[in-house]
Image (cartoon, rainbow, N blue to C red; front, side, top):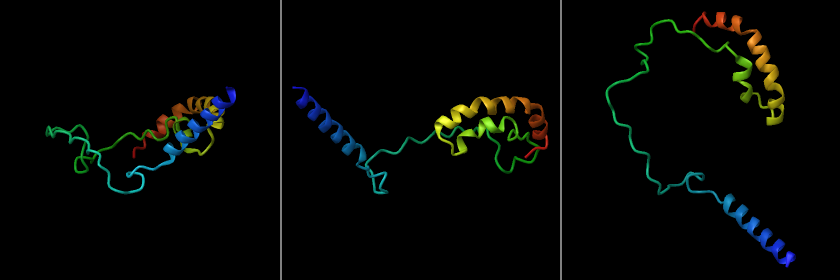
Length: 107
């Protein structure tokens, strides 16, 4: 009986992996039958400034907590990032006043 169960489990796992590896039409660049998302209603009101309205100074937050914020872009594996996050956070908090002042330079 355990041998049949092991064979059935192996067959089920192989079927799941086979079905998961089959690409859909969207992945292959083909046409899909899916319905497009509904369009957002235009209320005529916009919170974000447009390029013509953008003529003033803006605070640049790029230098505030840079190591912690950009850790996911480092290319390190997850285990490495988990180890380095406390060190990066400690360094970022120590240099926070300097990063806040550097942000005053604007964009």
